[in-house]
Length: 96
Image 1 (spheres, rainbow, N blue to C red):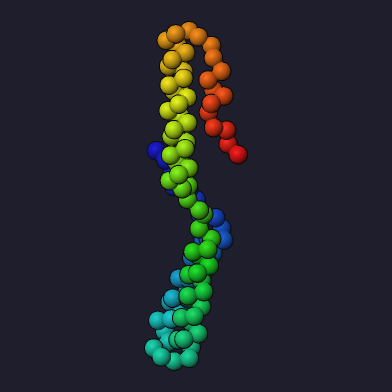
Image 2 (spheres, one colour; image 1 turned 180 degrees about the vertical axis):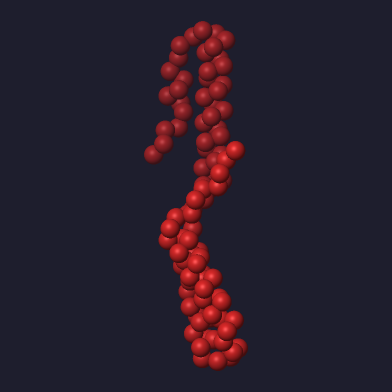
């Protein structure tokens, strides 16, 4: 039903480069200078991938959104049952 969001091109390129570098790491002898340089490159690529991850919505923001939605539904239900018009929507928190 829902397809996963496609990764950006730079993210795919970083992943491909990381995989390629890890494959090169397997060809070097453990403890050699080439192994140490390749391992440092793997660590830098991994750090770059971690930096590029999008930030998630915080729990506090989710709670604010949920409270606003509940408030809106309560107002609509009240106005539908009582046929009153009010300015109750002015109490809803506006995005900043």
